Length: 316
Image (cartoon, rainbow, N blue to C red; front, side, top):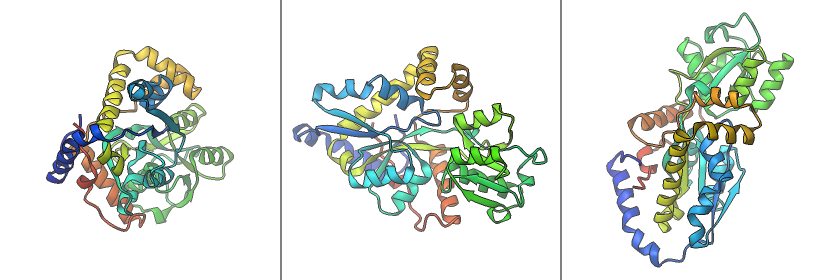
């Protein structure tokens, strides 16, 4: 399921396996708490929640599954740190790394998605053809996110820096509104919001392809993983089964996601092509996370460099 990445990772895996026997004598939790982040297009979470897949898995153990709509990365990691959340199900790579470097005791147990094409810079200014035309422009989008990372990477690729633009920190819906009103020249958007802008006549300055991976991860509270290794394995087994279902029941999946996100089935199909939901953590994902860490440190959002392999848990 996950690929071991280092000796430290293998050690973590061994610790997980060796503690399985103690779990069988330990009292199981009465509930499992999972974050629910459905946007931009988090298909596995939508299916797992609405089809009660985790509920089915854990009902024989009399474990109640609670979903919490905590969508902001820092709020997710704060809830992980406090123990209010056991699984951060779709956590931005940026948020995971910042939290780990600040001492939050978490483990990454899988990739959630990578979607470089799903993150983009859009504009209504016909004079802006590419990132090289962004100098002096007002650009709105959420700071400390994959979109922020995309902007920095796009500018750097053209010999520019974030200091060459007027960057305004705002959430995606606010950026879309500001773009429409002309208050900003470009918006940083993702998923359905990106498609909405393109369908409304905005043009794409660039997306993340070749610039950022757009990686999100699945993280677990380390204490929970140490205490209940078998539950963590079963969680990931349900997730893997969901990925299989998505491949084998495409039309049904599209219908369910369209209903939950309140968008058309055609839009779901278009968006789905941008996403890779493979949950393996291998060299490519490790590199993506290290690239993300470099961005965070360079932009003074992460102070302490960490060895990422130490925070990856092989749950096979």
